[in-house]
Image (cartoon, rainbow, N blue to C red; front, side):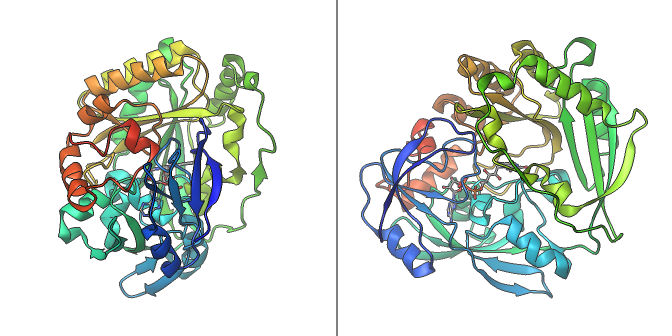
Length: 444
Ligand SMILES: Cc1cc2nc3c(=O)[nH]c(=O)nc-3n(C[C@H](O)[C@H](O)[C@H](O)COP(=O)(O)OP(=O)(O)OC[C@H]3O[C@@H](n4cnc5c(N)ncnc54)[C@H](O)[C@@H]3O)c2cc1C
């Protein structure tokens, strides 16, 4: 199959990687492209490129892009099980199935992500505490192993499933995913928003509403002193009301913003206005599924607001026990750095995870964007050190800067993952920039 020389980045638009890419349109083409000889830098798989860092990049090597493998193969309305090719994205599933009364049980905050990508990062959503991770809803996967042989893998198969769920594309090409959709009756959710004036109030509000089906918080990363950790908690329940399904108006960021556009003053003004948008007594309103689940997707190319140099997202999870103190330390470092942007999320997580390298653990997850400017590496290092000390970990789907040693300490099940890779891909054909940076192809 013809290869094209491309320069690609992750969603964070960090340094570009030059690679040779194929974009097959059919299953047979994909298997043929996947089996072609590759050079020393091996082969990497890529979906929609919505991971922030380098897990879907492969500088100097090959890449197979799955976005055109986008057929919905079968759907059983009795069981709710849908079978799709890996390039089908969450947007397509929303468009096709919501009018029929079905919704994906777990979704990331962007509907541009593909289902193949969702499996490879075992993604979580705003309902993680109750619904678990995406791969916990997968019933079966078809996988082309690095040697070109095909396998159907189920959760009962154990090690190979656990290495593929959240396995960053390193066990081979996923060509079919079967998973269970959930039934929904109405057009959306009833959302309740409430202000929390500091971190303690935020954590208490989250604990009080821990039974809510969906829960997510916006946190003011610039607030300090008595306001440290203030934010807005959003909880939501599916509702039966007919909510207008008019597609939200879509906007586009037309150019890279200049570097100075995001500065402590502009962020401070934005955060203050955003915080006060919700009345002190809180508010409750119906919101359509799309607007609730994918608020950022209404602004195409929003990653350009960080300018040409792009940005880094830091997302960690810290256990409930050590969480309050760790979050305080993290927020103090963040607000003291005067670098946080307005995109910042705090939510609770449950225990649900399906793979050796799945991110979730019971605790609090904090995610913040930082413009990529000099000194960002040192800031990231301080934040990862606090996370590690608290017994937490950072999310690989967002990461671009972690080092191999810290990764191993954060992901104690790496040994199991590594053992599977050694048994199916001894020549390390499957590769990525992240695999090299975190030494994922080396024994623990
Ligand atoms: C605005 C935004 C919000 C987000 N919110 C969340 C969130 O709430 N929760 C969450 O968990 N994540 C979230 N993410 C991260 C995102 O869901 C993941 O990074 C997801 O993996 C992206 O899917 P993709 O199709 O873009 O895959 P890519 O980023 O292109 O690739 C991701 C990984 O999948 C592998 N891969 C892709 N296709 C295949 C295949 N067919 N077979 C095997 N491996 C494959 C790649 O090798 C790579 O390792 C968010 C991202 C954005 C941009």
